[in-house]
Image (cartoon, rainbow over all chains, first blue to last red; front, top):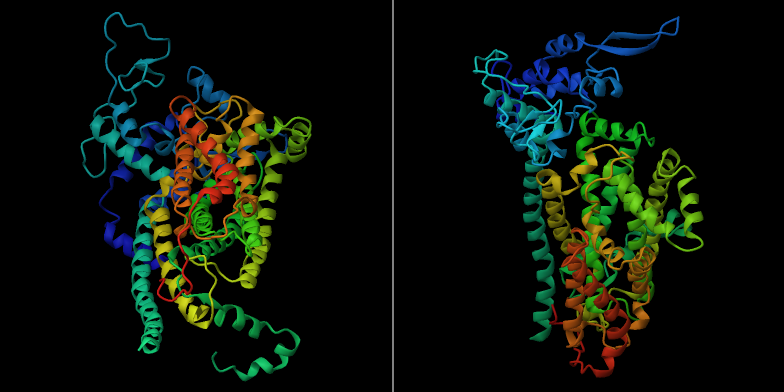
Length: 235
Length: 398
């Protein structure tokens, strides 16, 4: 399958220099979302699927600490994360996450694009749907006015602001741009092998199409014998 | 028919005649010459099952059957195991392909009367296989330990619990006491394997009995002589091969381009016993039976109706009294049976919707028809039905 993936790389134009929407979305996740949101099932090394280099992955992992059993006194130890570790949660545990977020855990991002009603399109819209609450509108404590939510409010403060981060490739970091890039990144975390899946699928179908033609010719030839014997018998 | 190779009389042949038996049963074996493409669905089922077993073995190598790690191990397979996403897609797609194939395969049997004398055993083992495939699929669906795994299993366990007397002890015997937890998950994992490999054994019986009675054909008339038959190879190997190619193409489109149809997205949320999903929907292949389960306001009643809807299939060879096999020559059955197929389809639709009007009434109507067809129409239709004359030879019936 390696040569197929290589072909995909060439077709898709994944090169080290141009940055893709997914890669920019990863930057948004890294600098903004990952303060509160987890990626429980994605390992640092998985980011190579986005086109990140080994060095970039090592550098990102090295910024994080992961639990590493107990020391001689029985106290919990940590070590620097390695590429094979899961990215996981910014909080030490569920209770900590709840305490920091008015009692609810910020949703995990691993499969969010699949499990969120409305999918990525809704997430992208929601990120741009913050506004001033209309006069007289009372919001529950710890919530923010957001027109994309069914009840008009959300527990997350507006995370994206124009120019909040700067993209290496010079793309202007507008709220809309960042929301869309993050959407592309979430799409990738939810379906990390989608591009390979489609490519392998095309190869499989081409193979089966060729096979079908050959088998059709063979079947016709085999069954024509029967027609010939019938014909010779009837005459 | 063809020249026999000399090695058949050799060392192996004297001790275990597998070569000559294979030649007799899979090369020279006489098949009716007029089989249509619906007769390829048995071969499709074999292909789907073979791929399920093979992919299942590779999944099992990477799966951990514990509450803490099951969900994460599936995520690891999908993300990091080399080609794991492909193996898992083949497995998940295989289930849908197998069920679709089995439903068509059984529908074909019902239409052409393949269950009638002398093929009752083929029908019985086949229906048994359907039940075994359902148990395997149910156990397998629990293994990823997503929300639908957990709550789907809960629905079924509640149904088992509703059986008076033995229900409760049976459920706790199955689950191992601590409800739907670690012990139960491990047991379902073992059950998934045991039933899957038992299926292979029952298939051997199913196929062996076909080789005793021979295949039925669209006319339902037995071949009268060598002019009515063709050897299995190369005639049906080439025909089935072509069909398998198309079958694999549909399978490939499903797993490579429509993977979202394979499972409900809710199953990508880890099982959470304190959060009940808004609606618990079964996989499409269980939907007709789920609709029957919910068709009556009693839990026990629903269970009896759903189990009965499959149990009644076992009696079909003895319920149908008509001497004519094929529906081609039975004008009334030709109408009644497609209505049954339509009812099954509508039950499936009802099973995927909330059990309120109008879907509740659709499922009630359809389940009533299901039982009426098997218990009333099959035995009584022959009394009023004027069948068409059946052909004497199979030549020209293609």
